Length: 361
Image (cartoon, rainbow, N blue to C red; front, side):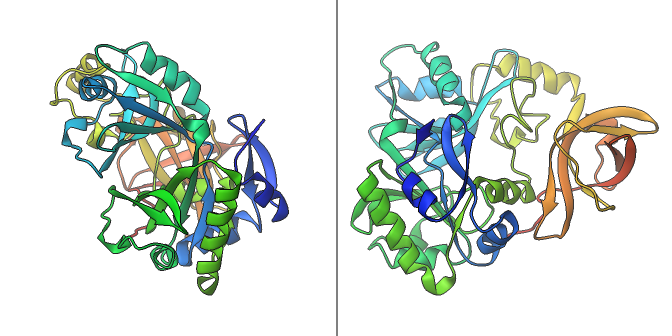
């Protein structure tokens, strides 16, 4: 297994370590619920250095990314980022990702489990003057998230963090370490993602500085377990659960990032056909009325028949009830309606609700 530059820190903190996407990663420290609430109420720090980073350069970098991603990259200016996805010709999703405009290059941030596949897929579509480089192993990435994240990090930098708008980034120093400071995150909270050199000494320096600065706010280390419950409360998709090669962006509720009018891109023709014919199924959010948790793969039923399946489910620490997402036939996807989650042969009623489950400013 690969290890991030923070691995010895996780071990010293007594983290429960698991294999994830080929990396040894912390799934929890004090406990998922405690860590989840620390992010919602205070500030938490995630090591997400397992994510993949690619650099795209060359005079044809923009048309290359326009063809391989669904969002409109031409809308980006230096210092801005966008959430996007890549599709196969049949509209199935290769991966969801972030695209950063770094001036002389673009940076793509992809899911760890898909990094190798994504790189090979992108490389197979190279055309013109484009240089594609995998820089994942040279980048450390910390996500500092929560209501007190700005106050914590502002102690460590001369960059005016309040001036960084959502999905924008700035270059500066955090604890005297050159960093890309990005106003992004997958928790729904105020937060930043910090990209810097993958050196163990620098990793220790930044980690210790952030925890010293956040001590007065009750800063806590956060594992992958709470990262999952936090993203699900916001209705954010997880590749491998809610989206994959068998799903398309329109049925997954990602039409807002799918710019069908920007010009041609891989998967566009199939998506236009799907839009014209109408969606056969949709990704819904639901809450359970009983003390039970829906798990990935559980059937969703209505009127005695299976109408879909659960893609993600958990106990929501914020709402103190079970929540989940899943695909159902379009006629059963109306907010305010009900479906039944089939749990060990028993049909448990679930209310279809609008996501996000937790409203954040």
